[in-house]
Length: 115
Length: 112
Image (tube, rainbow over all chains, first blue to last red; front, side):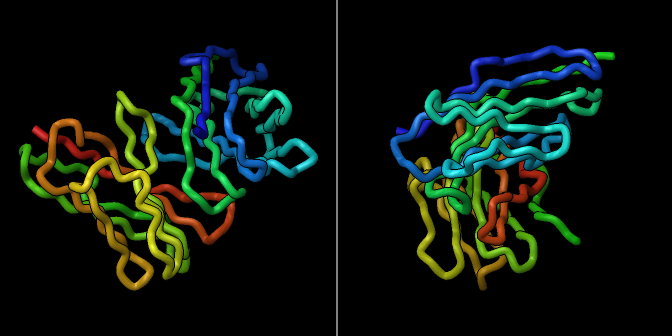
């Protein structure tokens, strides 16, 4: 069965430091997409970054990068130069057959950024 | 432009009553998804509509749950005979068959 595992319930980082949020996934399907979403205390789900299973290079979006290690089935999110506004819950998710299908979410990691 | 909207934002209902939750996707988006977020279960997929195709109902937890999408736009999620375990935030998302799913603000359902 498809599964997303986020083992860090909470992470703490100081402003301007980089932080890595861990995500491992399990699927036997060769075609899948990996996503990270941010959910601030307001409750809105905000798309951050996407990596397709056939993409050769790691995805990057501004301060966000996805460290995709296919053999290890990991898709860690790296946030560089953390900001106070990065404090939120972060969810790793997977869709089968690439993109456009339903997402399977991990349990989430709460990130707290302090000044 | 307008994002995904959901109504009501909050709903309190008594156990055993039926409820309807509404989602207005982004105009032109062909795909629409319903998810449920609860403390115990995290974020769960419920149902997925893609264009005129038959919906993927594989995530619906019981036959008390149903959803429809009229005219390829607005969707209504109906929960019949609500139970306390149905209490959760119900999130709707839409997508233009692309990568990003745009989420609405959610409806917080409380069953007393």
